[in-house]
Image (cartoon, rainbow, N blue to C red; front, side, top):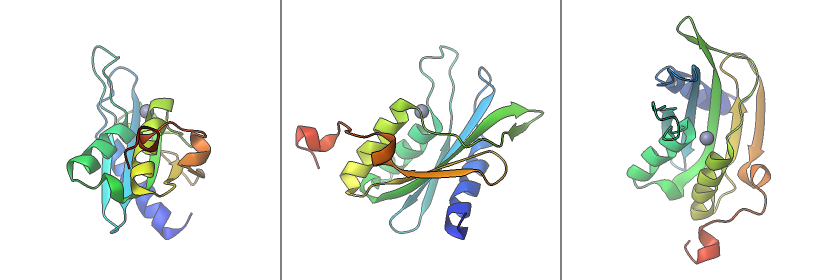
Length: 148
Ligand SMILES: [Zn+2]
């Protein structure tokens, strides 16, 4: 894991500590690096209705969008694990769900960069780095409807 990726993974781990996950007890953090090096993070935000739950990647990218920087997204790190005794535990790398892959693809197409997705774990050095084009091949996105 390079120092730059480790920095992004640590930011995701820090964000995961704020997860609102009383239903699944599965905390997730995501950290996005922008073209200027800025890191913006998010954590999962569950809801009692379950279906309204927001994933960490979605929260992070919505925050990026709120800052007007969706076209500046370059890479994202994701971590997650079960919350036990106040800590998020897990050594397996966590990959984004299908919905989040679509949301990451939105940023990738608008930024014209194949955003790297660093799938890491709550603990340890597990890492699976893949471009969004590999996680969501043949994606439908802004370009398909003439937005770019
Ligand atoms: Zn998701």
